[in-house]
Length: 190
Length: 190
DNA sequence: AGAGTCATGTAAGCTGTTACATGATTCG
DNA sequence: CGAATCATGTAACAGCTTACATGACTCT
Image (cartoon, rainbow over all chains, first blue to last red; front, side):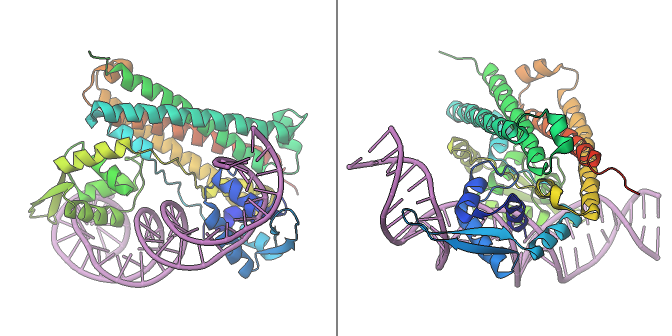
């Protein structure tokens, strides 16, 4: 039971197709849970079988038909139960950190590859920061942030988006400073 | 292939027993990769079978016997190859963020549970920050940070530890401000 | 006396990834 | 004309979690 509640949570925003959900989960928009499209489609079938969501089919002419999903009463109840359960501690698993940990034992070409990956990750983080910032601006509209957070009907998505930004800022800064520090130790020889 | 390289990376610090590794991976010390003890023992057998590590047994009297593992030449080569492979993008999967996303739809008791979990997570983060900070101090000894990073033989562990601290600071701050913001919207009624 | 530490595993089950499969439409 | 977008799935495999199993020693 994992993706399950993430899908239900995103469906709180309203009817969505599997395709839209899959995009959210495999790009970074649903910043709190990553999943591949295959997994999303599978989970939607299970959720429907368990009556936590319902779907209605939309017949389209110039596009493939699609199904739009909505959370049922039982789905809402399930989310309520989920909130009560102890949240399992967040488990970090990051290839890039493993490589940095082992950086000292790498040969020049390995180190070079690592520096490239750090830079790339920093760039990805920067790109995501921009996306998130536009999301926030769109959500809050005219209001100031604190004002929005006090008065808006729905603030969950705003709060998780804020988290996305701070995590990515952190990632970007760490990647850049780490790359610099590793470079500072291997002066260009020859 | 996943835990595999994380274990090899930790073993670069020198001979370790399965038990010690398991502790590192299931507590937060090996900050970059979480794994349960069972998984670590299993991975060590596989690594030994594939000759990427060797072990020697230590017979103990007042304690169970143990095996100490070391990275082989082939193990070092494997880490080198790993560094060259593109690092797979980091995938976030966090229960707590799912709950915050769904916060608006929770009843008072669900929201209360969530606030508790946010506080708890903030406390865990604070505790880990202290642990990491002591690790850093121990590693750098008398030297200043930038000095240490330029001159020390091995800095990988220091760099990942720095990352651990900034991630946990971020977690702590976000959990606390999020709890506050959610509380501000549900004034005590009655 | 009970909890925690040292020390190592096996087996079943669930979750996530990779590979495969299809096919029309729109944009550059 | 090739690539991307829309749209939905199945099957095999790899990785992670939960439950089970054992047993002496040390600290409160």
